[in-house]
Image 1 (cartoon, rainbow, N blue to C red):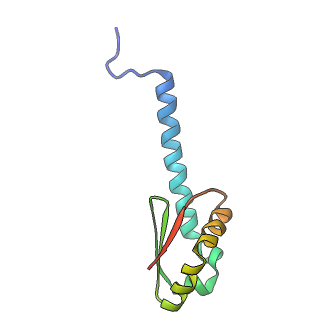
Image 2 (cartoon, one colour):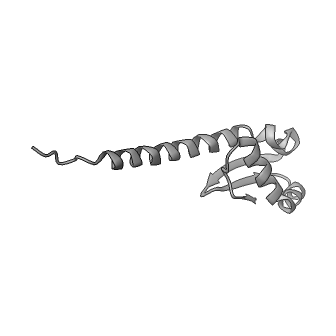
Length: 97
């Protein structure tokens, strides 16, 4: 008797690895948000009002337009710094608001 919802072992392993990758990505994103103050320092963290990650982009809402402008000028270096701190390529770009 053949089961209706049977799948091959290869498909089951592939599905498991995809789910693990998604879970790992979410854990790394959460780690980044929780360590924002450690990565950027208390000065920047003090002006940060909201952090969000969508589609490998980090959205940072700041209460200081001067700080926002200064950080925008060095955002590519910040992406490298953040990813290095986390130990994985969690984000590809930063959007300052």
